[in-house]
Image (cartoon, rainbow, N blue to C red; front, side, top):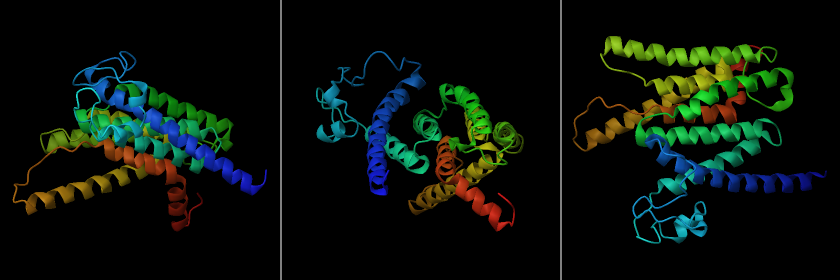
Length: 284
């Protein structure tokens, strides 16, 4: 196929990926709202949380309907949170980014699913301070299954860092190290400070990411999440000082930072790993 035709095809698939991602994001909004309440994510159909009027299909178009309705319910005029189009837009961009990174490989649908899971984790943790077991419990065995696939089909594009001949061992170590690091940090914070340092949901989330990205990926995710969390925390302290407020110990949900680290490793982890190993004069 000529290069020009390939570029057109890739652009078309990237656009389709964006649209599918926006549609998945719309479903994630339902999950973010209902999962913490223990409600079904299938029934009833989408409705306004205020007047409980069912939302027609033409008012439920991802991103577009929110703009056309002026961010208000058509029936009761209750404002619709900006969170809805934001979740849809983030998921849409991530789906396109995954395709552009991995192309037509087995990795693409797997990482699209993982990206959607991380978006869900982020917004549930931000709004409810919990990380859904519906994501982490099936996510860990799925990640390990991907490592097994990588053993027999290395061209799949699945990112399990470490020697290609033993990706399953890297994934298993990722689960143990990922979950173990946060578990030990939580116990240390409880012993030294007298309060919990991490929620157990964070432990399971990092264990899941370890299953997908192996132990080197876990270390990268932890470093990225720590830097991002420290940067935001320091910014909040400065803002609090500028307003004359008192500094105090406040919990910050860590799931969004772990998810951000997971996305960075998903899209750029192999490059980061190779660059780091080369800088150390080691064979990646």
